[in-house]
Image (cartoon, rainbow, N blue to C red):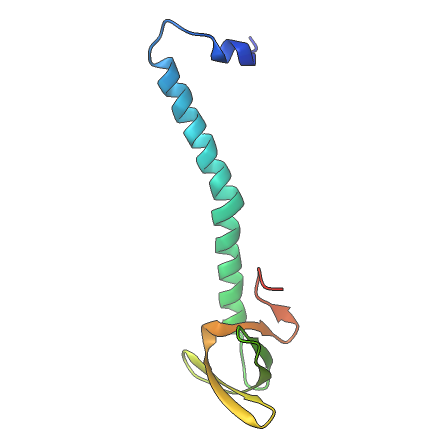
Length: 107
């Protein structure tokens, strides 16, 4: 038995048929939302965390603000970066690129 679009839109004697179709549609939208938005975002966040965990002294980094330099010191949540003659302390989470590996979603 195949269902056509017209059969799905046809009125039925069952008043709960419309409700079950609505719940099916909401569930389908939730699945699409999860697989197109939430899951890729979680994967990108996980990859960025791994990139930051592997950060070590001597790595060349780029920050969100565009500062490019070499890591001089790594602490729990802060990184000391030397760029030219300036030394800057930045939050670890503000680093978007380590060497040639960039965080997902950042060009």
